[in-house]
Length: 307
Picture 1: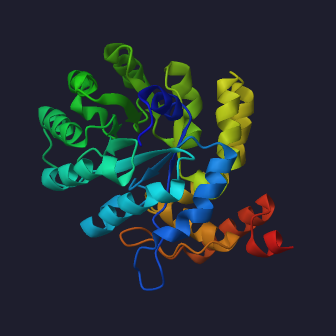
Picture 2: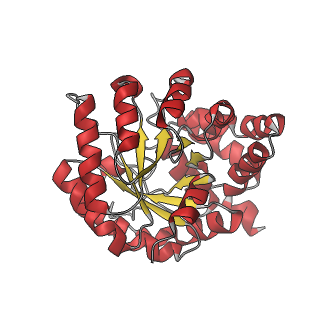
């Protein structure tokens, strides 16, 4: 049973954790390996979990793999958090995933912005409208390129079913205008994770996305609580404490984003396999050593946990 809309809206004002897609040694997806990650995130207070997001390597999965992840992850979450299903690819594929989302146990869908090089602003609106109609669930629009313009962004917010926008562009002044034009009823979420949450919160977003929750959800939740308390100094201190981790993820033109999370999980004792090309895998020796030192400082190396 899907969450009531008011409870979903509340969940989206917290942390939207973007789950990795685990792989086995033969590069086959292994959803069950998410069980301890989900349990830890839910226990820490992460209120929404996204399957088939970018940290989940959505565009590196086959359609069948994306279907399986969407089908299996909600049962692993088991009501401990809202489940948001990432939807994208060609319009027929996106609508096929969207139609199944409710039956699979998702509470909402998140529509990836199409990466097609020939995207018309009105074409994106039409794409989201068709996916929303197919889903019959609340829709979060994932906006990574605000170059489509404010009129198109406003039109996206008017699509029936859209309840939120995951804003993943650093153009905060455009964000402020978009929030004003969207009006009440549309929640804006910081889509650039913890480092961008303070300025975006100040402009009117509520909650933020996070890949860090796969490894250290308590750190993300502490930042969220500080922001909710209006304690920006405390929030910024928490962000400073994870800055080295985020810097490693930003290496190789952000190509190490998922790889660092997966490598860190392996060092902590949770094997979720490799990141697929075109992601940066394996990490270069210097980055791998820096990550090991960082996790040692956080007390998260597997041998430390065993001790």
